[in-house]
Image 1 (cartoon, rainbow, N blue to C red):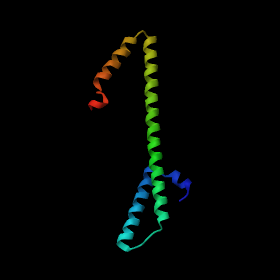
Image 2 (cartoon, rainbow, N blue to C red):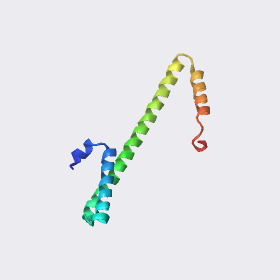
Image 3 (cartoon, rainbow, N blue to C red):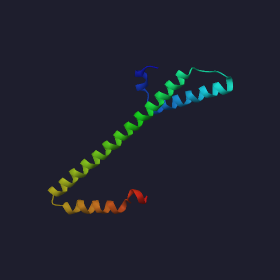
Image 4 (spheres, rainbow, N blue to C red):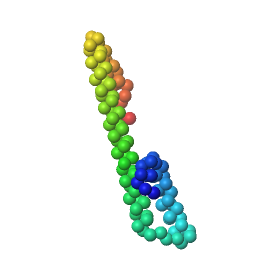
Length: 107
């Protein structure tokens, strides 16, 4: 499979394919006595590790983007409320939100 074809598939799909292939190779070795070159296995394991890392990086980047959007939304809302003379309303809503969502160490 080429690099281009890999990029067309989702990371999750390819990860599942590699896990299945490695399991099949293990089964073939123990049940049927069929050996595959170690280079094939380590190449698959390296690709698996790379895909898992990329998937984690994509997830982290998306979470960071979501937080940036929330921050900007809050800033825009605060400015809009201030322009309308309702700064205390924004602060009241923030205080209520802080009370409703417990700190991380208390969940």
